[in-house]
Amino acid sequence: MIEWSELRVNASRLQRCLEELSVFGRPVGGTFADGITRVAFSEADLASRRYVIELMRAARLDTWIDAAGNIIGHRKGRDTASKPIVFGSHIDSVPCGGNFDGQLGCMASIELIRILNEHDIWTHHPLEVAVWSNEEDGMTGSRAVLGELSRKALDHTVNGVRVADGLRRIGGDPDRLNEACRARGSIESYLELHIEQGSVLESARVSIGVVDGIVSIDAYEVDIHGFQNHAGTTSMRERRNALLAAAKIIQAVETEVTRFPGPQVGTVGHLDVFPNARNVVPGWVKHSVELRELSEDTLHRMGEAIRLRVQEIATETRTEIAFSQIEHNAPALAAPDIQQHIEAAASGLGLQTMRLTSGAGHDAQMLSKLGPMGMIFVPSVDGISHSPKELSTWNDCSNGANVLLHTVLRLDRAR
Ligand code: HGY
Ligand code: MN
Ligand code: MN
Image (cartoon, rainbow, N blue to C red; front, side, top):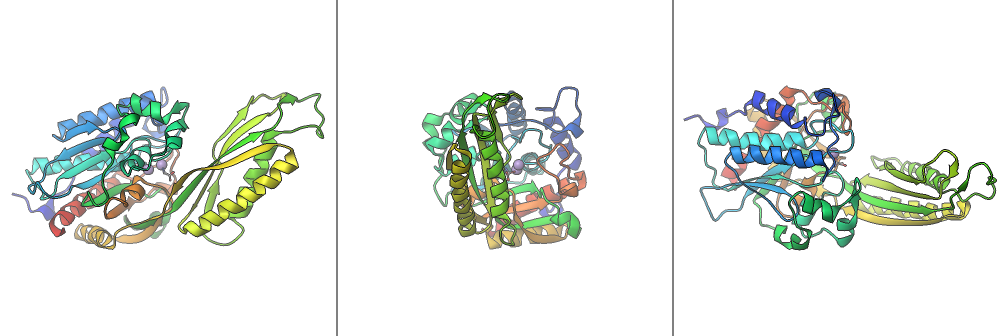
């Protein structure tokens, strides 16, 4: 029998699964290089979920969809009384996204199970692969597991679909979310392998990132009511242009976020403009504001500064503006001992590591409230993500998967 330290994932099978998965949501006539649009609850999301469920069942995982639409695959442990070691990620994407964000973590998690099966290795702890629902627009699945999915979040629309309806569409049940809830302390640990989505590892020429923490994220919805009117006959003085107000808010976000030095970021990435026609003064605009920073205090202060500017802009433009916070994601710290296990696993595989903070949000942020959490990052070529150009080398992907495998085995022995 093979020594566990000799175990390696099957790199070509991992690559094949990522390539097969990338078919779901690919632009018509496109190739792998064209990336995917697989927003949560879409046909592409449904098809990719069916593919993943097949893979999980073929890996002999006891697989089900919980009420929050998460796909969970359970492998029993030798010690039936012990808590599960959970690992996974997500397979939904942003519009025009890439083939690696979330998907690497899911495919590597399933590959890990296959390797254990092939070597007939049974861990003390049960193992669970989790594919969380709608990570990209609200972390619906992982948030629901904590019991923190609000009514407002269920009413939020993702690409035109209400989250509550979307959950039904993917096999969940928004009326029975309590069944998906897990108690604090009910998991042994949570691990997530993910692409870095930035350029820190690549610049440092280090193949494995050990996440020390994940930033806090606040999301706001801005609803601007002006007055829709004719673009030729309404004088500039008479206008109550909702899009002009939005433009000023976009500038205010930039100004407030860059007012003092630091890594904080702010983005207006989504706008709905009504009626969105060349010859009509826009009457109504709805747009997002998203702020990220490790310190919740700084984040809150930036939000309040922008709120004040929004009030002034409403007066300046004679519009009515509602500025409402729709999401708060607390920062999350990785457990120190899990960071050390990841480092030991990487070192055993001859891979160099460095610690870094994640500016991207992850389901791990939610899961860190259920038990100790750790994240493994692999380099992103040119630091690009949330783009079809998102890329990580196959070698880095399999390195990350091997570190995940060895970290799980170390945690299983240590705890
Ligand atoms: O938005 C994020 O940071 C993540 O990729 N969902
Ligand atoms: Mn993402
Ligand atoms: Mn992701």
